[in-house]
Image (cartoon, rainbow over all chains, first blue to last red; front, side):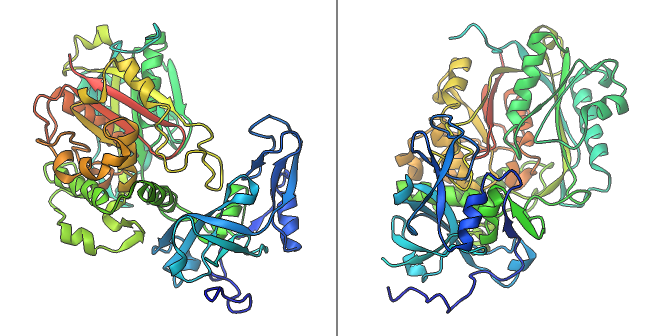
Length: 148
Length: 390
């Protein structure tokens, strides 16, 4: 746990200026963004067959039910893939490179995957490693901390 | 095999391209580039441009078929079609659509084209600057995950992890592309050889991709003309007959936020068997291949998914010696491809496959009769074709 950064150590991993996430007008992902305001992580789960699904969609890809619900899940993940980005593909990233993008599986939610940044030290960059998902918040729905 | 097939029913009878420029260097508009390439392809085919009666494109091409037909004075536009999806995924599919239109009798001479002017329009390798994002990008862009180099790198990293692969196969692809380009006066990197030391010390774009693992960004246009087999027999050029063409996508490949069911995939697994079945050949019969390389790492995965080697064999198979012409076991990207000839969203790879089976490639594989093109790994749909000479 020594690798963990405390919540106040670093407010955001990447600088200000990247586009802010915005809920879709159709409402398909409204529950997720509402939950971030409560600092909760919720993901889509089919009310009919129980399948987890990500990203949010209007129907269940397994049983075709349109009755999609939401499930609160623990912020626990397993590192699935990661990359170190050196090229500033957005002006806000001009002085922020290199930075780490991580793809994390959620074992508590059918191994759906989410994307975030690595807040732990780079020694945590081993695929399959478990870690905690920090947040979520409006800025950081998917930052990962390493705890071995 | 199904009785429904386009095998040997159509042929490519002409190819053409404009000068290939570095990004934003084209002195004329994208539309003019498209017109020039189409005129050159018709000239290579020995047909009157006005006899073209079908136009086939892909990736939301900005040059409208009806505008082209008007500007070029086509007597009749019997077919105008586009493959869904972005980037290079539709390159071979646009040829397949042209073939389908010819076999259906919609048209007699179909042109397939791509034109890009990144000075007139935006760059592909940079993110649009907006205040907010919604939909799937809302779950990725705030973390700096924006562009194809990063998406492809994430899948490549996973594949390398699963099969114990290091940087060598990636370097081999970049080096082979640059080597082949040194024989090709059309290539943007003609006269600009790449040494392994330069590759190794080049800057990272996104690990595991060095600068030279990434396609260029270019301006220009490429085009090719297809017609029915009976008409092709009288053509000015040796016809390159279409053995097979296919579009495809794996189960839920495009699930958003990196949720593809089969993540470390180039997306050819369900397509490739159907392609070879239509062609009636096996991977061993392919003399050379043009494997889309927006980023080098995707090439080894595409080769595996077409059955050229097993994933456990990548380190032994995807070597510089094996993939370079003329002596390699499977020469690939023999014009220099997207990395060193021109990033024309892979249509330059289709033209090169045609030249190989015609026997007039600048890096000719001796006696090449069969060439395969794999278009657009990791996007959806991806598309393939095989051409051969008879």
